[in-house]
Image 1 (cartoon, chains in turn blue, green):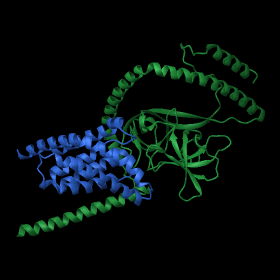
Image 2 (tube, chains in turn brown, blue):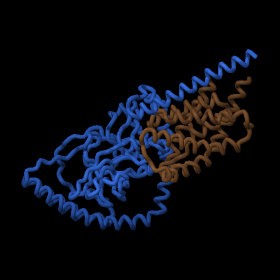
Image 3 (cartoon, helix red, strand yellow):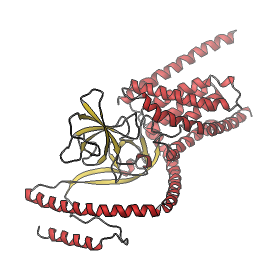
Image 4 (cartoon, chains in turn red, yellow):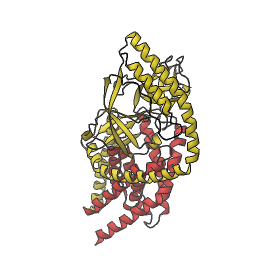
Length: 166
Length: 319
């Protein structure tokens, strides 16, 4: 239970950081997506089940708190958490290169799933210009923040697993 | 062996559970977007839990940006002063013309017996405490809620123009849907007296910083640089709030309509303080007063203000 509390606090802290402080460094309204980074890092460390669960709860928090289309973040984050969780038993946990580069794949996948949902919801947009204005700044931000977020998640995960063993 | 079978069964069950969750989420997305489904209490609860953290962190952030802003201002003060002086010169000329027009307007109104209707707004000031990355929707969180009299669908403005409306009011915080959001649509007019063309301003997914005015007929009198104000149609937004300037016009893909890209009046990248219009009512006009000038500067036209005041009282007295 305490483990859950700590994780929840960590996620809430990151969410607050993302919504209250990071918009100050936003480029044309686009700021880094820490929630996606947490999901990917956690999935790499903990596997499909917990990765998916983390993605779902983080996405739901974001949907409820931010007032965007309800459910879209829960949906994409859960899928991505489960997908990246598949790799968890194939990489060393101490290895940081893969999770960090995976965040790029994650943001691209996230972008396209959301774009597909938007089209299904009936919103039309020009994919090429949207790619330029949204995806490229997002990619740069994600790359910059991927390492610190993964590092934090890794340390927290290590502490939590140590407690589990005792 | 038995272990294996159990595992298979287990994974089957898990697969079904996951599929169920995915499909139901998919349904929720669509029902919610069509307005058929709302997360009843949970969304307010999330707002309530997050609000103290968001308020604290955004307070720290605003202090930091205040400090850096002050430093920058000190550095650029000379240049700024020069520009402001220029602007004061221009504005003074404009001001003179405006007061002339105002006086004329007043005279003509009394001549016509036109009942002057000015809307007066009751407003609540609010601070922006949260904002999600503007990718597919643009919503901000402000630090006022139902306890301050803020409710769903109220209009949110700054002194420069329209910001959006309240999407959902929590107890002490609310979500504001910006006019940049693709879900938002505002009934608008061209402000220019010869034109008064009506259109709808919607958020644009292609360019999340500029909304677009749609449904303009192809031969309508809209040119670049026109000021767009709210029309009051639809009832959510009161009439006459500035939305933005037309920065460019494009042809709609259908061929019969034009689309105007708007430069919003409000700088959405630097949104810190907003005001919520809690009530708007018709009110009698206030007597005309000269606008306040910065005292103590050499551009302070004391004499002019005094003259305007004298003219004002002279006009008021006969009535």
